[in-house]
Length: 371
Image (cartoon, rainbow, N blue to C red):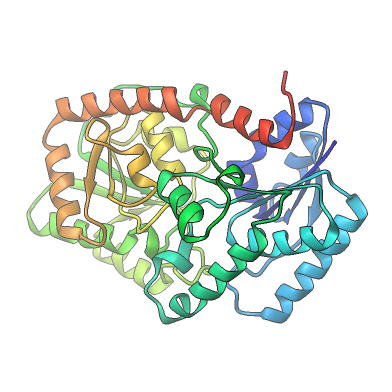
């Protein structure tokens, strides 16, 4: 069987889908990866996957470029003739579902890691595009050969009710899963309390609220390190600006470590995980910090509340830096609470979000029996 993934960026594929693709390959399938190749070409080949370069303007600024991408995708589908295609994220799902229908693909898997900028932003552009995208979803995702993967119960309800998709073709599968062996629970470090937001530096990840909370903590005299881990994503309309980031750093409000591959080390060196996001599918950063036994503070929004509850952390109102600062102060002052919540977080990941559980569910949807 031929299985083809379309993911916009190779770094995202490696981070979120590589393990799954390797399992599909090991089960005897031919696996193709359509993506923008930036730095992981040899890694994909090393695992026996077949990479096919395809760039995609994620900013949505050039409709002619997007049409050209769809035409190239059509030619790829016609040449490869995959039995299963797996589209990941908003643009690949919309464009890929259309091209797959034209190409007569036997089984189409569309995976949304949350509803992103279009459904979380109050920008005029997002508001104008929302009804159009909703109509596209309702038209493209109802085919008998089409299956939609969502990552949380809120999105499951939304697509079954608001978007009127048949329940038999909407599947709740909890994110990309976590390889538990990659994350050890170790005692938290000594010294100053370190609070980490690990994510792309986007407005809708709550980065600005995190910085405002850091300002409030500085004014109160709290000795807490507030750390951003992740890169700017200037192709995303929600990206933090370089000027804002430079200003925060020059004022000493936050520390910035950029993108880091050694995520387990990030959480070993931290005390508290924070994600004040506006909406999520199922946030990988929270899952990995939970697997590391770290307590969490997150917005009380879809996706975040799948991982964070009263046992594993603290939920705060969205877009509320004052509440965020208070929650950070509370956890920073109570090591026994941090330990209790961290242990509960690890247990929850083991029971609900392990890679083995998630991978088996997706492979079953493909029709693959793994060894």
